[in-house]
Image 1 (cartoon, one colour):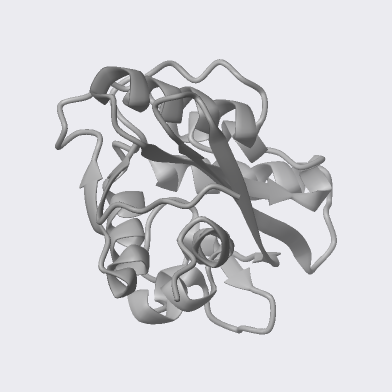
Image 2 (cartoon, rainbow, N blue to C red):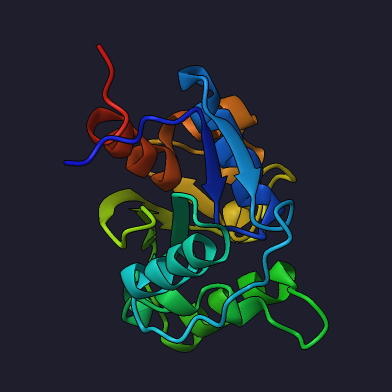
Length: 204
């Protein structure tokens, strides 16, 4: 597995919530994170039907624009009773044509669960795929999964996206109710980052 040896890493996301989480997760290793928006990079069109495919699009776009190694994330929530939806289309469910409305997306998720009379607990997983890519095109892939259940009504104002309707396995509160330190210790993104740290960021 190739090692990342720098102290400054371009993270190919325009999502402020994801960027803040990445900063917190990488800070203990002394890694300075620069976001795609801060670097003036455009948002590439995500045309793949998998988390891995879309993460590679974002990583490749950032690498080609800057000539620097880049880390990209694609992630979302997969609901068992909805056949894994919204999955890779998690952000699309929030699109309004004038920005993203995750309140609308969360309501749609619950409405569709009601429509199929999904029994409780309404099981789901948050999934994250990270792609760390170098300028020569080599990449390393890391994945993290956080199992749990979808709840209603939304609870909490922390986090971002679907966090207020997702209670992780073994917890009675949602990610939206957790302080960032607690969420960052168990999230799907934290789990993917932990795998990455044990591999491409391994240090003596």
